[in-house]
Length: 350
Ligand code: PHE
Image (cartoon, rainbow, N blue to C red):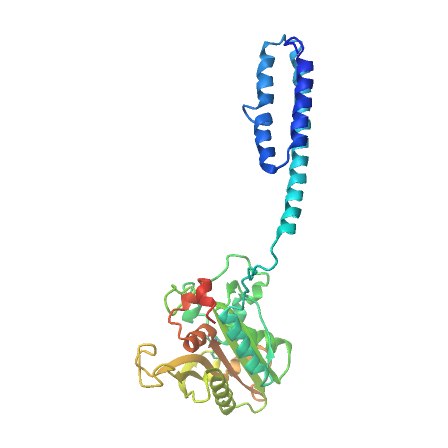
């Protein structure tokens, strides 16, 4: 084959390389061929170099033909590669030892907070409550005003609430914020129905607290609301005592302490006897023997006025409990951040 006939030389090279590729028997062999043929120093690259000596008129014709050969060989290589890997997979199936023990897939599970939320809601469902949810992005009106929280109340400060920059879609209801408690859902429920009302509201709430062992900027609450004729503080105490015994065991002692919330009057905080020291005082309860678990009270008449209920006709009880706090007490976890770090080694223990 003479140097003077590059097209003939190329045709011969094409035939030879095509045969080599077709004969390849393994993926490894195919890969070596790819490098030897199409690689930077491969046979086609060598051939290209030899074109430098051609007269200017011949070069484009040979160049064009060379590109076609390159494309054809590349296509052949791809085709052969998929054929060989299909055959390899089939052979592997034939060889598989089905008596070997399998690899068990790691099964997921519900997060401990999700589980406790479900458990609390179920306890209330069994007492005849309905489960309702509300939005996490809330109007100022529902988070504050309608709950009798006045404009100058400290919780309305920008440092104590996450406000959104978005313009409010309903300016009459004030700006948008991330709800700081689940209580706004009380208002949303009462706006749309008449008493009797008996609902629990699980959900996320947000406060711009610096994270430490007992604070997180996001946590979960379950809100409860009962409105009917003749609801009294006795119903409130009875209901919450039953619930806490169910969650923490029948021997759990509870105590109601007077407190202040703008949306309830009278209001109370509820403590349970510390589960670790049973009331004698330890580091978990700060030597007090008691741990606060929830806030509650009798719905303030102003709240009823905001939703068009007549406070002379109906009374109501409400409460809000923090789920992380309950989960920490029940499981002996001493740092709230552990719930949100997503370390599967911790979460798998529950
Ligand atoms: N919303 C109150 C809080 O987040 C809890 C609460 C709810 C208190 C209902 C009384 C009645 O602290």
